[in-house]
Image (cartoon, rainbow, N blue to C red; front, side):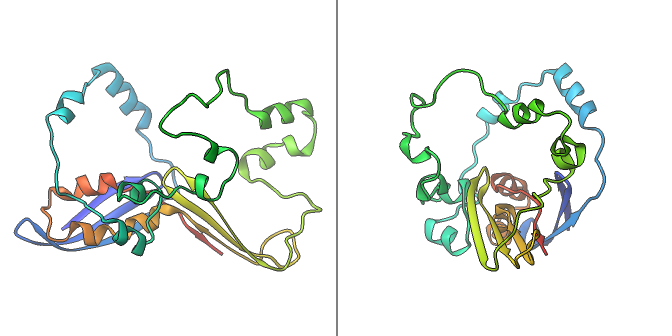
Length: 224
């Protein structure tokens, strides 16, 4: 059986082997799209007009014993973010790496977060000098071009941050130039997705979408 769904600019295809309605094997296959997918505005308009309230449906639905991942298993698979924490492992890079002020907050309360409006400081900086080359479209929206005086030293570097889906890592190899000799972006989505075949084995066909919905996925990985 061939199941296909879409995530942003990617199509996730699952080739599933069944015995009656029980999943025996599952092979994920990802295809990238290079065009915009239409219909989103039409769906939002339709949905807002219908005002469909799905809360009673969700409240009446109980799902148990599906897509369970233990803490040790999550670590062995390299999972991170919400999937790792849901497995009982309290690991968040914002606290582990002590960046900014995240480790100063009690995450069970909101008292430490200051009030007031937020402000986009980058936009304010660009508005001060409207005629500079840094304010042109290519620099601001197409790509963040480096300064001509910027130079990557000849070394290997890996940095990581806690993205919404887990650990987002960037690996660079510098060669004393403006651009890296090699770079690799590690989004957490592919790492989270790799455990899917194991989670769906011996489960019912109807459980696949439930398990897939519980996996945090961001499609996209760059290796140059």
